Image (cartoon, rainbow, N blue to C red; front, side, top):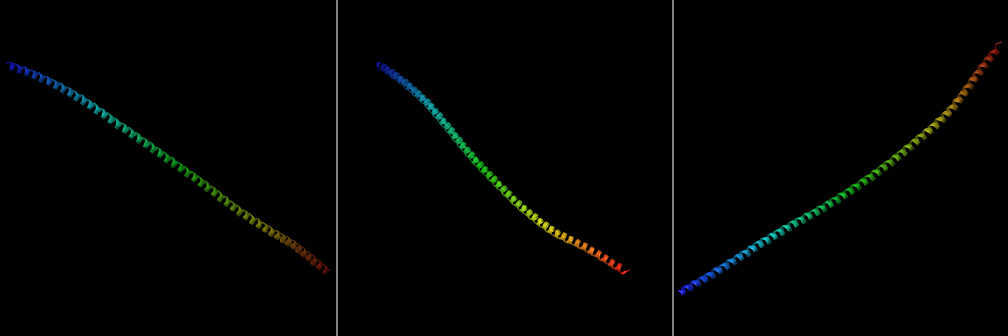
Amino acid sequence: MRDTHMRTERERETEKDRSEREKARGRERDRAREREYVSESKRDREQEQRERERRERKRRERKREREREERERGRERERERKRERERERERERERRRDKRRQKQQRQRARERNKEREREREKERERKREREREREKDRDRRLTLCNTLQHTAIHCNTLQHTATHCNTLQHTATQERERP
């Protein structure tokens, strides 16, 4: 019995050891589970942290990309403004050239008009000169004509006088012959 009792005691001890071992294993399992839980939650936290960092990196990248795009758009706008200023300068140069051309054309037109006016004036002067010549010629002709007319009048007067004289002479001759 003792043997049985021992066995039972041993069995009890064994069971006790077993139970303690099982408790220890359970505690070990609990600790492992806890560690696992801790490590899972740590992993979860780390993963969440990595996810947050990844999102943050993406956000920063998007922000940098937007900034880059904004800078590029700014540069493009600046280039466009520069091109527009250059086009405006070119238009201004063109306007100045046009003004210069118009001014030169007006100047040439004025010069042509002056030249035409000079030509007209010369032509008028020639006409006046011809008119003066005609006037002089007419005056000469009139003077000559007047001289001729005067001479003719004088001749007529002389002729008239001669005729009168002849008439008187004739009358006198006839009177003498009658007695």
